[in-house]
Length: 462
Image (tube, rainbow, N blue to C red; front, side, top):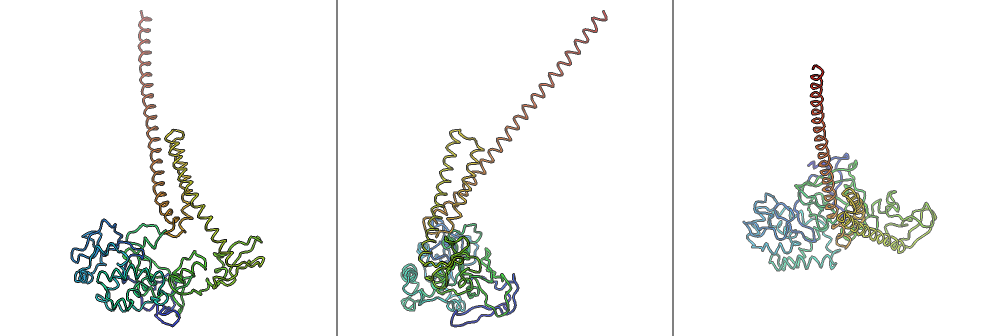
């Protein structure tokens, strides 16, 4: 990695952050970093301690050396279950099956081990922001106390001194604020609910990138969990190096709320302070009083600000806009669910009609293809729903059903093609047989004619 690309600075407002140490061209690598640690999401995901692949709860084995680390198989060739970690597990005789039953402790536990296995990394880790006071006595604080701190204490992994020092709360805060979502190795999973499907990676250098809703970087992570951060635009010397920690497709109110609750700061970037969101109007609503106007927040930084039409100048209370947006979301949800139910009924009816011989295979394919289009449209809306909501659950089901439907359509098309080939081959064979018969008949006829001619010639000669 080229260490001259950035400099680490610090101030009282945003803490430590990165600035360009020279002019950086778009596409240049700024950070190339291996993770300090990889762990499951806060919702819990059983992973192999060695290769970090997801494991079924009934299919894991424990490390033969320490009896603690959870592995996908006894011959796993991963590298994340280090010799030092193995030795500490063996010395402490930690119950691996207890860890498997409480996946949420895996990441904090591995962070704790840094103190004994890699003190320099532990020191760097503890420098990261945890927003302890902002999190105190919040639901996430209480969740970590119950699901992580108390379990680690029951397993005799932490002491009363650690609890009094709020060590686990600091560790969990650092992980919640500073980790990046990464996919398991060789993964093809969908990202409809990444907070449950994806892992979390801790990258000490990349975590120092400050936030902006219009980032000047983009990042990628390979199957070895190595992160590459590149400049997405030209970055002049001494300029801040930004990454967008929010969803770029969300409006300002939703983005700011996410950052407030998850990262514990108020974003005041150009996009968040611009009522048009840099001319995208992604949060704007069409005015019902004039044909050209867009209703936009007068002061986007204030969630309770009035909204104003850019055409007729009509003012609207923020509560009214909230009602309109919520109603729009409800209608989209209803549409998505209606489409989902429609395609299901269409598939069932099509198969029934085919079994009753009301339609042939080609009609069945046409009907199923239409159902596929409807299911795709339903998924397009459902993907925006929270993963743990009923709609989010349906989205996951719909994706699986879409995969099965496409396989079914492909199989039927193959059957149609096979039938057509068989029919054509049969017709060809029949035609060949007819030609053969005709040829033989012609030959017999010619023989008969020749025979008659000979008889006729003999009779004339006499």
